[in-house]
Image 1: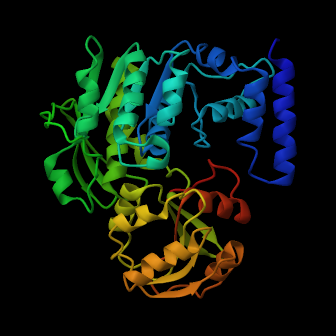
Image 2 (image 1 turned 180 degrees about the vertical axis):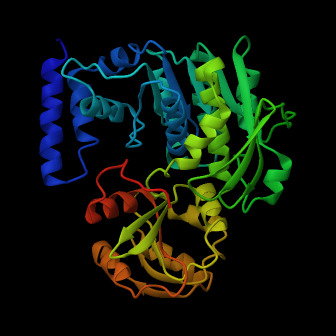
Image 3 (image 1 turned 135 degrees about the vertical axis):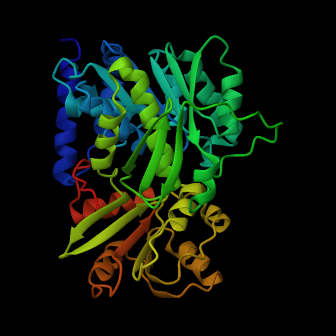
Length: 423
């Protein structure tokens, strides 16, 4: 009962925030609770009899985590996770407020959590994960992380703290450098076959290491082929085919990582056919190729968070897109990174907005991409875009950064992160 007063206060804060901002209340309650009961999250994460699984790396954490959770739940295991993608320490406190009881206990046999690269390293100082998945290291958030090698060192700390299996991306040299420092650890690899990589629209651009190349190890789980959303995988020599929730080679990588991790968690009870069926029916994480019905027509939402994700999502943009809303929010502290992306797939943009609207409009103008409207008022821009006549082909498409995404979802009343349908 020692956490009862703190949790009550946290719940009251969450209730008050959500009265003012429907769909909000994710950050502040967790921050308050972390100050009142700083050890609560660690005690909670230690309580699961099947241990803690950490999914981390630069990109793909939310989708991979959702996939692992879906597979494991479909096999009958009760899971505690963070579906709002709140992947920093105060976010875990908020998740406990939402799902736990007044004693701080949350239901589940196992905790499967996506974790920010930096925060995961501090979490494992007090809670050792049983399984860790490291997806990749991209050149991202350099204002925060300074250099990809800094991220690699953080991820190495998490890997070294892992008591069971560390799952690594066999195609990322950064992950192979991490592996070289994991003497005595049980390591398994996942990756993408050369044939699948060559046939894909776009490539995964891992951060360069400027070191001698390490030979790619044999991966027990590989993507063998991918076309649009159709994927073929090989897991320990057993093949399977299914449909991804979203387009792109990056989502294929998330899927094979999820299958490898679920197999490690479930052991002999893992059934590839059952796992593939779970992924075949899984909706995307919100804004990762999510399609919503608005005003009687379909609208696709595509989140971009860094140069690689921007590039991959553009490379996999549907060919028949006629109307595009492009919004770059205040989360993009250094808009110059947008200039590293080949935006030629954008033939025309209907509306440009967001906190960094001027930088976004300049980028498009430089590349001679026609823009119909540049609207600084974000909510007016949203209304104007959605009020456009229904396109003659394709669906209205929103491409936005995380800040613009959060503001749009609140404005349109998309407050439940799990209320996502498969397109």
